[in-house]
Length: 102
Image 1 (tube, helix red, strand yellow):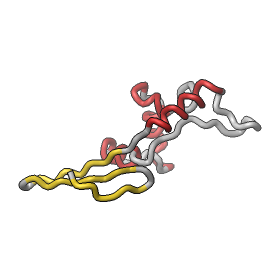
Image 2 (tube, one colour; image 1 turned 90 degrees about the vertical axis):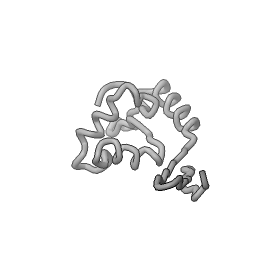
Image 3 (tube, helix red, strand yellow; image 1 turned 45 degrees about the vertical axis):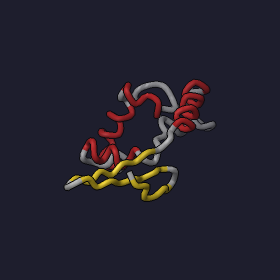
Image 4 (cartoon, one colour; image 1 turned 180 degrees about the horizontal axis):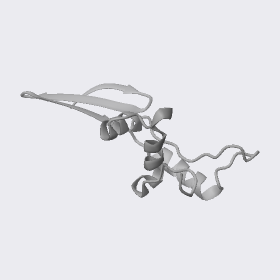
């Protein structure tokens, strides 16, 4: 696979075989997952004045992946229900920075 670019830590590659085009993205999310775990275990995610709650941190490559998977951008205000579903998915707990359901 030929490397095309690296932007914001996301590597993109492409390969053409016959009539098929394969585009692949790769992002090392080890540091993000470790940070999220520390935050999740460290406190309840509330801001000092208790006005805001930090709930998740996603890698840069998640947005286009979610758009492809769900057919909508979960980070747009009109798709709040989709984002809540993603945030509450137990398979995606590594992106959570605090406990609880949304």
